[in-house]
Image (tube, rainbow, N blue to C red; front, top):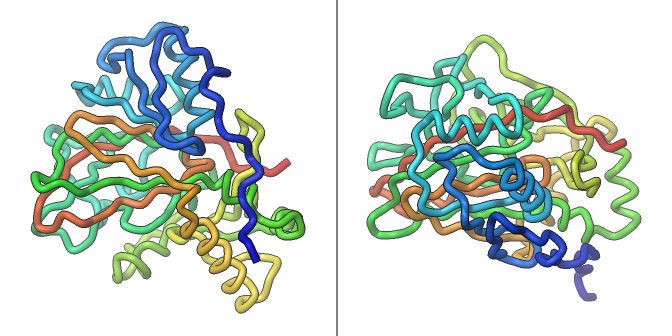
Length: 301
């Protein structure tokens, strides 16, 4: 029996007709490199509009050869909305480093690994902080140091393509479901430790959401934060979640891969893309800083 393929048509770059930027797709489904723009300078209204259109089409945008200060980074992020403060900042807890190579900034999350790291942020398929009531709509990671031997890529996948490739009956079924997203899960799972005291965000979101800007449907469950489907028993929930995670994570045609170079910034759409930071460079180092933008509450209708 052949696997059902995505019904979503391939992206047509000509339909975007950019005039102030260039767009080089990474794949026909997700990801593009953007040229012709200097993010250290304020963008024109047309540049911003073309970048937004590309973002809502490709969902992962890579900007090369950018020399940015923290304020440049945050200024670009604020074009898309209010900046997100990660709950790890307020808890003053692992796994993230406090080294911001300057004064600590609650709007900047350091993403760093070296020979002293026991784990790295983002190692495993996930969307960012979906335990929040209003999770980030997107994140911008600016990498300035890459492993001298190579490696340290980030993989991305399209959860729009993943939804589209489900059978019609399964699409109808998962649209009736809601699921818990728990901020304590990374501690009890990936980090193998006890969550800090004081409570962590825990909320319920639809299993399928509608992208608020392009109207496409997206699977919104991820192995990093999702713990239980409300409408099912525990055993049913575990089985359906595992099936959905396997479907999302195992299909290479949903994916693209970003190979980092120093002074690269990648901006991804947290509403319809998951990512996986590949930790294949131990004991070498990688350093970056991330800014995220607060989104709206995920909805299906």
